Length: 123
Image 1 (spheres, helix red, strand yellow):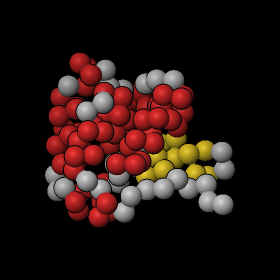
Image 2 (tube, rainbow, N blue to C red):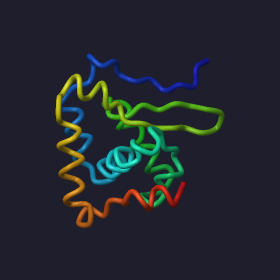
Image 3 (cartoon, one colour):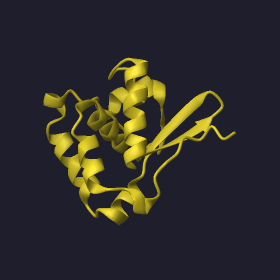
Image 4 (cartoon, rainbow, N blue to C red):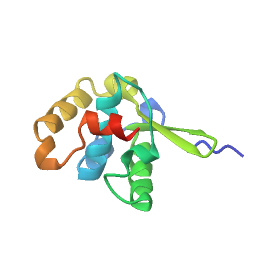
């Protein structure tokens, strides 16, 4: 039995689902953190997001991000590692992810998004 959670194919990623998913502040913060970490490490583990919410709430948000195609989850032992599906998203909706990240960065303080240095220090 595979422990890898199901992910939509590139063709199954739908814009309304992606936009709906990004409308939640916690999910937007998760995507923002993943994007901020891309130059350092393409993956973050579940514990890197503990500042955002409790474990069960985060598990719900991770599932939503995975199901809509924004994020890919890789299971390694007891750890789950997440990364943005940038290549797939850029192929389906060119420029969308960059526009979302840029907009989120401008409103990071108001949205209470975790900064890059906070994520690096937590890891």
